[in-house]
Length: 294
Ligand SMILES: *Cc1c(COP(=O)(O)O)cnc(C)c1O
Image (cartoon, rainbow, N blue to C red; front, top):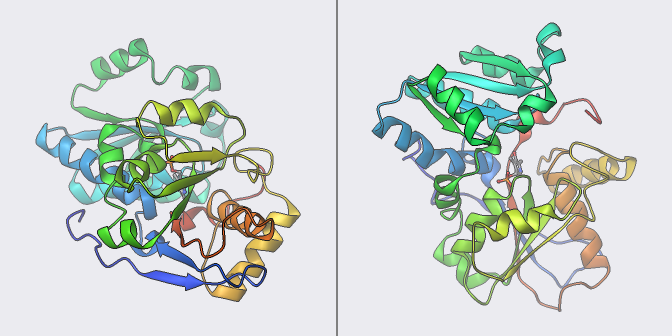
């Protein structure tokens, strides 16, 4: 499945009323695959190749209850004949009805371990991973959000030669920083990569700096609406306006925030005139109807 990729990902040009001279192209990774949302396709591609190469039987990964990565991983595992285990943040979820993301993952055969927030925080530590390896020797472990070296290699394939030549600024949403790291690695030196964080805080600067030595990038959290999966009336209004105006679906955790942010920056003349902007639509539409502020 990962080899039927997507040199022909559609790119759609839009124009904001407030900034008629700036052309914005939206690269529709949401259309790469109906079940493996946008950037997750690129993040999983080489990880699944590696799991197959190692002869593993099971995929283990981590996420919150609304994780697009968990849904995508469950589907890809199902398709490639792996068992899958999702280690999900929040032990209280074990006693509740599954939300639609987890239901989807379960349909694809994923089994869940619901763990406390304290335990979840240890998920990248050597001890935790060692214990997991002992318990599941046949498992290939993918970190939270899917971000590792192979994910970044996959995400560096999002940009084509055309993209490197024809755009000055590349905008994308940032969660764990894997996608933007791949874009930075793939960018040309004249390009600037601007990340819109879905989370509050500047720790992502350090995270991304661990994955790349290049300096042509910046991450801002000004449009995260207070934190991960938080929304505001303004955000939801913008999202509905944008979807009606351009017929491009968004979701409230990542992609609506980046376009609202971009629209605001354009109003404030943040970019020089005639800047050519490419926005990466990272997908995530499976999480579109999640409840607010979870
Ligand atoms: C997971 C996700 C992101 C964040 O990607 P990272 O590589 O974790 O930064 C952005 N947008 C959407 C729609 C996602 O599902």
